Image: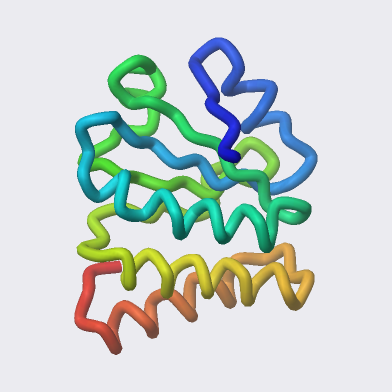
Length: 133
C-alpha cells in the first residue's frame, strides 16, 4: 500500500522523514500512472524499510505540483533530508521506470548515502536505451 500524502502532511511525511522518500506525483486520469502502479508497489514491498513510497494526487495538491514544477505525470522525486536528490519524469514506458528503480535499489543495496553512483548509473542506462536523462 502506498501512503497518500497531501499538502498538509507533506512536510512531516516527506521532508522530515528519517529515511529517503520516493514521491509519486500522479492523477486519476493518468494512464501511465496506472500502468506503473504495480511496479511501484513491488518496489515498496522490497525496499519499504529503506525507502518510503508515498503518492500525491497532483490535481488535489496544486501547490505541491507548482512547488516541484511538474511538467508531466507521473513524476517521481527521490527526497532525502528534505532535498530532492533525483527526479524521474518523461519516462516513456514501464521499462524505463523499472531501470530507474533498479538503479535506486543498487544504490541502497550498497548502503551508499551518496547519489553520485546513482546519477552515473542512470545516465549510462539512459544513454544505452536512447532515453532522455
